[in-house]
Amino acid sequence: MSHTSKTRSSFFSHIPHAITMLFGIIIFVSLLTYILPAGMYERVLVNGRKTVIPNSYRTIISTPIGILDMFKAIPLGFKAAVEIIFIVLAGGIMFGFMDKTKAVENAVGTLVKKLGLRNKYLIIVIMTFIYGILGIAVGYENNIAMVPIAAVLSLALGGDLILATGISVGAMTVGFGLSPINPYTVGTGHKLAELPMFSGALLRSLLCFAALSIMAFYNVRYFKKITLDPTKSLGKDLDVSELSLSQPIETYRLTIRNWIVISIFFLGLAIILYGVFNLNWYINELSAIFLMIALLSGLVSNMSATKMSETVLKSVSLAAPGAFMVGFATSIKVLMEMGNIGDTISHQLSTILQGLPLHASAICMSISQSVINFFIPSGSGQALATLPVMLPLGESLGLTRQITILAFQIGDGVSNLINPTLGGLIAMLSMCRVPIDRWLRFIFPVLLSIVAISFLTLIIAVTINYN
Image 1 (cartoon, one colour):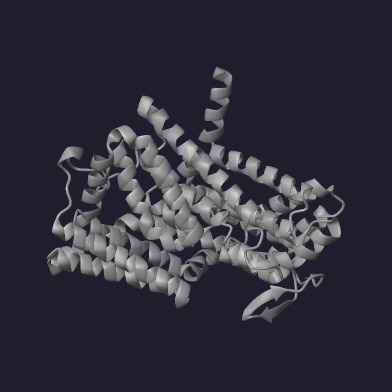
Image 2 (cartoon, helix red, strand yellow):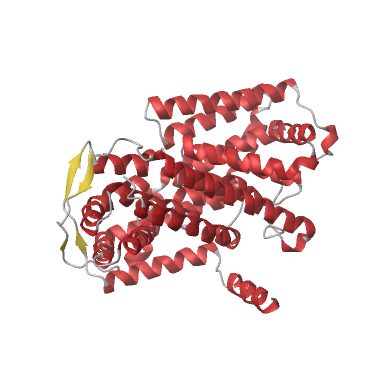
């Protein structure tokens, strides 16, 4: 028992700092450009988006990454990720204004007072599922503004910032990744496979519910552990300034101005949802709404121009490390494009799958998508790059198109929990002020459990010829 605990502690202690980890991946990808041949698939424009032509892979002249290009990819990564970088800053500014008005603190304090600390485990379960539903129905980066609320709530219940990421980031990543109505993975996949949109939803819904239940269980389990022994908290030295409640629970109440600020916030979210689903809004429009919410919150709270300016700069200073990590992670994607090895990796993985037994081929297809996800972190981008190859390959192996898409969704969605190249994950972790190395230590057992139940679902899908 003690030996196992020591081994586990030793394993986790070797997880490097987030900057070190990402720079190691940058070096690794650069070296791969000298080992793997450069290659590409031919692509055609379908509905305004480039889609791979199956069996069109060909090698091209190698473009290995030199030392100058390796470092040049870093500023190019920031350039490519500028929209996500700014939404991190805009979200930080909005939360900074709402925090300055005490609206979030008073709302969370009042909520906990009404529900009672005796129901704290139930609150964690309910909030985990609420954030999961946001991931299922609303999207991923669209929910970035909701993350800091989980931080305040977790601290109010006696938890830490790691628990806050489990409640919010973990649940939203699981909900979004395994959503039966995910427009980027399932939706794009069904279009490419010429299947009814979001068909086969029952099995996907059961998998998503089971995965969120696992996330809720681990959140409660971690909370109990750090409550009994605070020294086991993974977030004990993280910055919680302006996130913790500043007065006893029983003294909290919402003022009229607090209600106005909260109303402005939810009105902004409603406008965002309308814009996303009806006007094709994305990152820049969301950032604009966040800034408008911040400005209106300051105005209704009678902040002076100087106070508002100081709040902006302080909020930016708190959000800056996370914004930096987003740009730094995106440089890996830039390196893949410069080295022309993304299609090569996809092609090599698809050839490995040939000749495998039916159940093993479905699981290995999912694993291969997880590998590809670290190099192509965009769900729709990965679908357009790999599914035109995987769909005919799956049929030649005896897998239905529905199973191939399910394997793709699992490989993409579950691996998002630990994907350091996924800008949205890094951005949302930064909103909770949690570095990715701490996150990996927390989420790894959850990941293994969700992978196990996901692979079991794939086995069931093959057995029943899911179609």
